[in-house]
Image (tube, helix red, strand yellow):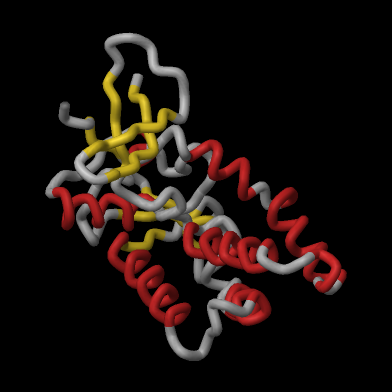
Length: 205
């Protein structure tokens, strides 16, 4: 069993905070990626920065433990497009729609995520304004499902922006949206589920 930690560096010391109880003789591991990144982005980042292809349980699961953070929207029927083999780094590897079985190359899915990520960073969208982020999600809803990793990152950013506001100066619509994202969309449950399934590398003593 892999034990995952949060790591804090202070001067020459390293402090590890475990996210679960650690039995004796267990392997202690540390994550090198963002929790809400999808599998292609996590594996690409680890390959480019750490020179290994992660093959952890989360990376090997097309659904990412039921969160579907990697999935895209099928341009044909709107179904969920997921990788047939998440561990295949070939840009021609097949992703399939769960409704119409339409095949899409992995490289095309990666380009779509990169395109939307670049669009989000453009001057057109104010990432400090929750209303602007809501418009981004609405405009790209046909290509960006609610459970895609980028959509989840935007949703989390919206919640954080709302959290910085005092409840008595928030509009009713904003309060309802914050509650919807936190409870109905269950962002906290997703994060709790994934924090025990990071892409990992063993901590070398």
